[in-house]
Structure formats: C-alpha cells, structure tokens
Length: 381
Image 1 (cartoon, rainbow, N blue to C red):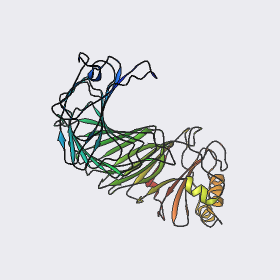
Image 2 (spheres, rainbow, N blue to C red; image 1 turned 90 degrees about the vertical axis):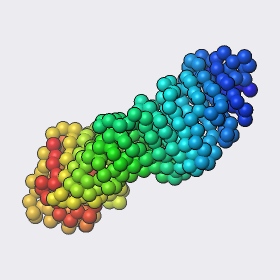
Image 3 (cartoon, rainbow, N blue to C red; image 1 turned 180 degrees about the vertical axis):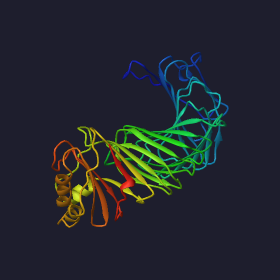
Image 4 (spheres, helix red, strand yellow; image 1 turned 60 degrees about the horizontal axis):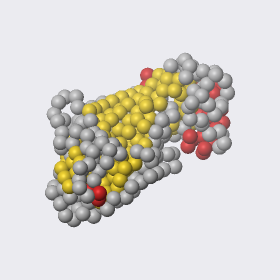
C-alpha cells in the first residue's frame, strides 16, 4: 500500500515491500509499487522482505530505502535512483551497494548487530545513526587500492560504543552530528591503513582512534566538545580548536598537540566558581611526556610565554587551592601572556587574555601527572 504524505511539498509516497518479488518504479501499473519524482520512502522492515529478486527504481527525488536484514544475511539488491539506505542489521549481516551511482548515504540504524557494508563507492557517506548498542560496522570501499584514497563516515546521535573498521583508506573524514556536551556521540575508529583522520561537524564526540599508520588527526573544524584517545598511534600531530578541546589522551612516541583560538571571545569559558569547577573546565591532556611530546598553543592575539622566576613559581605551587594558584599565575604572567605552573601532581598552562587578572575568558590547559614541564615541550604564540 502507498501512503501519501502532505506534510512536505517534496515528500512523495511511502511504499512497503512484501514477501514476494517486488518491482517498484515510476512506471509500475499498481499504485502500491509506483514511485514518484518526489522524495519517496520505501520500507522493508521485516527481515527477508528485501531480496535480490526485488527491483527498486526510486525515480527522481531524494528517495530512502529502510530495510531489516536477518542475522548472517548477505545481500546486494538491485537498486536504482535510491539516494539513501538505512539498514537495521542482525548480527553478521552484510549489505552490498555496488552499481548504485545515485547512492549518497548508507546508514546502520538503531538496535543493529555487527555488520559489514561492502562495495561502497568512495563518494558515498557511511554512517551509524540513533544507535545505543556496541555494534561494529566494517566498511569495505570499492576501488580503494591507490596510495591516497579518501573515505567518509558519519556518527549521528549515537550513544553506544559503535566501532567503525575501515581498511585500505589513507584519509578518513569523520563527521559528528547531533551530539552535545551532555550526550556526546561515541565511536571507536579503527583504521589500520589511515595516515590522516579529519574530524569535523557540530556534534560532541567521544572517540578512540586506533591505527598504527596515523600521523595526522585534524579536528580543527569540529565545533563541539571532543574527548579523544589515541591507541596504537606513534608520533601523531593532533590539531584542535578551543571550542572542541575537552580531553585528549595522547599515544606513544613524540606527539604534537596544537590548540588554536585560546583566550578568544569565542573560546569556551573557564569556570571560576570553585577549584573543582575550574579543574573540570580545563582542557585536559593525558599521557603527555615532557621532553618527548610537544603542545603548541595559539591564541586570539599574540600571546608569548611569560618568564616567571623560581620564587614566583614556588609561590604559585604553594597556594591554598587551584583557584588561588591560577589567579596568582594570571597576575604573575600579565596580560596576553601564557604561563606554565605546577600545582599538586599536575602542570597547568594558563593563557591570559588582555586583562592581567584571572577571568572566565582565559584558557587553562591541564597536563595530567606532569610534575615538571620542559621549556622545549610547549610553545605559545
């Protein structure tokens, strides 16, 4: 049966596949199988009702196929003029999308088990959406045999620990959308051949990146919070802006972390309510090794390093609280200066704005467990 939708002038019909051999097209003789030149929706929500015996032509418009695959099913259906596919997959299901030039997006939907998408065109975006499960999606891109292939994945409103496994791709573009600071997207990204990973979007993200060849992680275009952990990487260059920087856990080797936009009007404010609140609002960097790793700070205006003396640093370290220590560091450094100081078991770097006193617009970086900071291990500009 078809169900016209009048809520959107571009919305077409909703059609339902059956347990038989279905032929859907703009020229189908029966209305229940006839697609339109609008944005049609085609549903196969019962496992087995989408099969290789079906022939589906969505016609013009932005057409979406939503289907359920049973556990262990391997299916590459005949599709034409379908722009978006959403699959609810049973464990071990495989879905092939070769020979569908119109396809722009293919998604693993909610409550899915581990699945594989194969023969995916490099121009097609692969995503996980509305997921609360810990499923693994293996993505096999077609034609990914050159030295500089680029693939695209998206995480949308996914609160589970979904894992993407993407091989044979040198540059992986990751888009996070729909997450916020209270409910970020979660993803594990395993990319054994990737050299560069680009993270962008408007959704907060908690992610673990695994890849022994990854040398660059560029999250400078992400506009919401990022909690990033590097796993099996060595000597990676990580770039992030202050809007997104929340917690970064570095990998092995000599990593370089670049944080831009510090102490700017658009930067995330630090919380001066209590010492605990201040500590929680700092940009936290874990597994930083002084003398091996480097943090490069870039501010809204030129912000060189302050040059405090040993007595000044000792006074800061002996302050009664982190809030007191940071306030003293701010007045010691002066306006538009950056100062590194130790408090407790950690090293902090305060980037002061144009006021020579601690303010919410300043930026604070916490280097967890770093007792002493080598001067060569950080820069500020």
